[in-house]
Figure 1 (cartoon, rainbow, N blue to C red):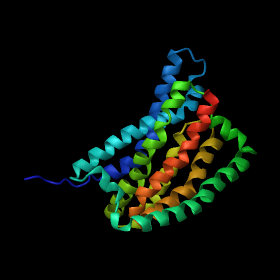
Figure 2 (cartoon, helix red, strand yellow; figure 1 turned 120 degrees about the horizontal axis):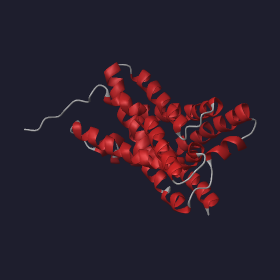
Figure 3 (cartoon, rainbow, N blue to C red; figure 1 turned 90 degrees about the vertical axis):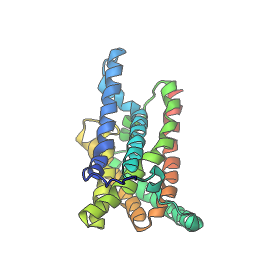
Figure 4 (tube, one colour; figure 1 turned 120 degrees about the vertical axis):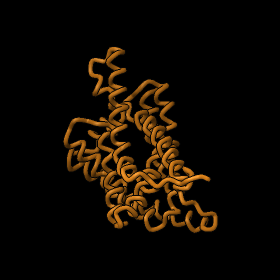
Length: 244
């Protein structure tokens, strides 16, 4: 007779900070490798490799989600709450959400870059740098894997479990959304308070909005993660163009 385990109480909390810490860990690994290969400024140079640190973190995250779901006697795909019966309705709602999400995601970026740096060029130059061509090509796996890792972690796994354990679903939404925005301070970690503030602030409105949509209609997660992957694809194209 098989037994179904309950979620370890700490697991949803750990998953909220897991990605932030892994981004930092993999950036340290990259910096160490760059130092071994002769870089005179390995930490600064490692900041340009953030697409690959995200890729590595995505792979670990997916593995952890699969194992946690197995521990509970569930399947990884159950995180997405996909329903065939509401496919067309969910798809239409997602398209409308994406229309609203574009300004929510872009305006904080433009506003904060002007407020903190005086222009949008300074954060762009920090984030987007040429890297070896093989690394830029490998980075195409980042948007693919992030669809299965990022939002499923915060809103498919942690948010509903925290809502149950805290008996405060709306607090769980706020905590999960805050954690999603906060993870970006180590993508990459730049030891500049202005840049750290910029990275957190630019993602917070979108994190709150995405979390709210998924909280109100969990079956939307499947469709929103596809949109997320498509939105992240141009980031890779920018780095590839700079690396050729």
